Length: 388
Image (cartoon, rainbow, N blue to C red):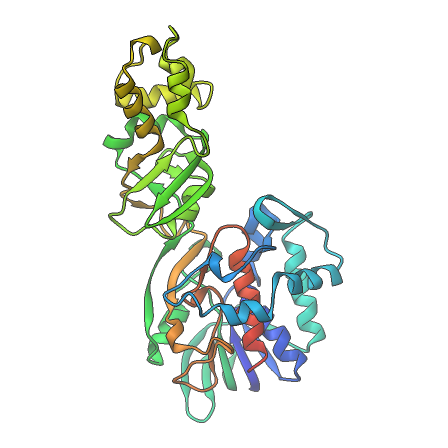
């Protein structure tokens, strides 16, 4: 079978690329090894799909080359994707920080992409394994549906995160086969684990969340942190995890935007226990766990100014060193991937291998939590779709 374009991977990026290539009159075949297309779309956002973020900009992405994503993001924006959503009459709502979700179901996004593929004349073949790829003048693929030939080949197989959704290292192996450099991968947007000895008092707090500001490697996020039976999760931890490297410590401010020292000084003549004062601001169970690890609480009028200063410093610079992450099984994205230095930022085409494209999560561009990674999928897929 001969096609102008073969796309391996029927996820967000691959389907967007297929739609745009089909609109340009290319004959397009999308292959996926899974039974269903768009599995990550279907399970995202608690089943409602956080499909983009109104505020998406290059500043919300991590990459060895922070400038690489600028072209694609500027040429296909959140507004462009919202227009597609509106065209299909999909109702949606906005949550914190510009996050957009379907009112009904993530399946609506998959149906929309499927319909757009049909309109563009795109063929989709599921349950198809690709066993071998070679290139002479065109690309030759050996697959479970037979041999295929294509002048353009797009790899859109995603990263390593959420293997239960069908994630594999196929795309990375394909890049290596063709001699492209790979930025080492690690889990991103993932809960962090801590040594049970150091963190033991807090392991009993599973389910409790606290508003906090988390710092690591010069980056900080202020949102909730969530205690789990292994360590910490919640939006602020997921965000910072993409910047965390093994061995790094986190600094957590449990009183963001508040002067805790002034609050303590204002109560210094009180006979109330320090725990009673702190219970006004933090969950009582957390406070009890905190003091079980440090010192016992006593009446406020028995603390010296120096002691209060030390307590305030500890609560605003809580230093913790994770032992690791919960891995790709719990990670929402993969940090790293195909080196952007190997690709054209305008078209996503390999600089070494004409006609070979890499898009979406497979590329070393990783977004923050909140719809940014979907926007990169739409934007990079659109960019490649204009060129294949």
